[in-house]
Length: 131
Image (cartoon, rainbow, N blue to C red; front, side):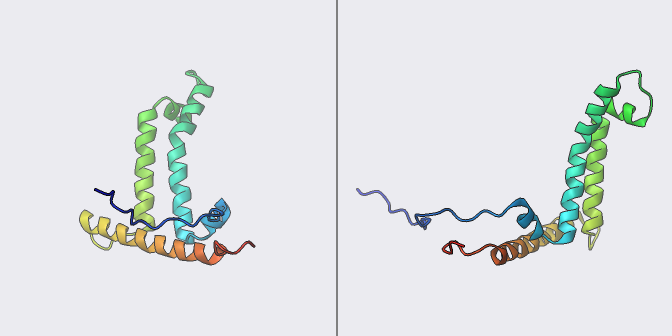
């Protein structure tokens, strides 16, 4: 008995494919996708920012930021709500059906991905080109 032959295409031996810098990679995304990405990152940072403020401010500090610093679950829920609201604002649903909206989001993500790959291929030199 012989082992089955590996049918996967192997990467050529030599220099690895060039990796784009963060600026080039983000520049290949459409503006709306970049702004949405920024909003989601800000929402992800909210719980940590308020937690740090709550520790620095101490328990005697008054104000809404100090209150939110002592309520990590509330801040996390607010951050999730803000991220979902940003999603609905940036990609408005065509219908009120959640299933149709998920299908719409999948199609939009596939479109953005294909545009991103094409833009990245235009910006990066071919892998065989040393320049």
